[in-house]
Length: 79
Image (cartoon, rainbow, N blue to C red):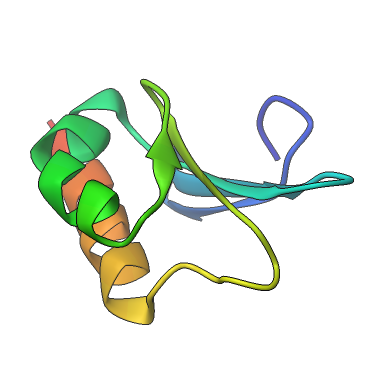
């Protein structure tokens, strides 16, 4: 848990966190992961902040994008 949200980690590092809210869900990763995949996020019709991507339960995030964001986040945080 980090910032009150569950997440997935490797060792001591949280690679991706997630949350569900009343109107949206979010996947939270390292800043560089969002920047690196900005075109793919936009192509999927999703909104991104500096550290997260939001989506609705009725239009979930593509599995491939989740995998790519987690991998990019891991690469950034593994340094």
